[in-house]
Length: 353
Image 1 (tube, rainbow, N blue to C red):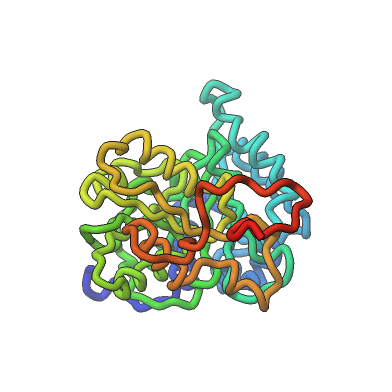
Image 2: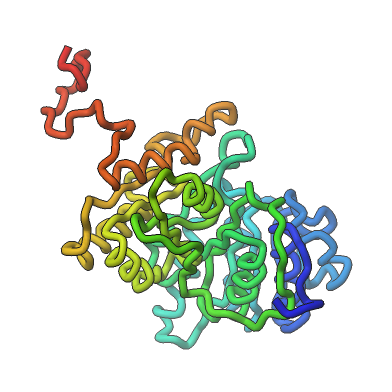
């Protein structure tokens, strides 16, 4: 921290400060989104910015995500640096075609003649009791799409740093904001120099298990590191989901011999699967146990009153640590070598009855 430049801010206010700095530093930067101007956004992340920079720089758009993204593509063609807000994670799908077919590919398609310096802000994840389509974790779709950078901050300082780096990048960036952390407070160095998006962060050091996570679960994993019974956990905050800083993960796993990955998104095809596969390929001879994933379930996001069963919490993460350490855990009653149960069978797969 640099003295008077450090202020205690909420996560949301830190992102607001980063957007303000980006608008002030470059007249080509403009913000677009539903209700982001006069209202300041549903989460008030853009509060006050239209008053400060005017309606031409902070633009209230129609409720049409595909149109918003298409307009951003045209603006980027003309040399602007649009920052697009998708109001909720589940609303990004109408603009999905624009993002994966145009935004992600135009640089390659034009042999580098056209850049797409577009930042796509998406409040994502659960934990706030929202209705359907308001609590999704779509990161794997974008990580799978070549041509996009994907980042997710976990602290107010990272919120400030990463939004500035995203807006300054000539690559399109999907910027995933963990909405249930918007009110978390911490000191933020507003005079910090522009930092790169790529490197992961070592959130806390440990010697027994490497615990890899990002965005909303970093705080929960740090709590797990404090609560782990007799185990020393090394928590890695990815920050960048595409590309992933595998160098830090590999060096940690070679030290600990065990890997646990935690994320809110569904298990199948999730980012945890890619991390587990890559670490197994690169660190096989150092692993003392197969990588363990602690994730959301393979279901549509549940109703608000049930989401606490879906989102990995402290107990589920510690249970994953126990699995990696070979301790008693919640899956002990399941026989990993049992024959699959035929479709339509009513038998209990754990007992055969």
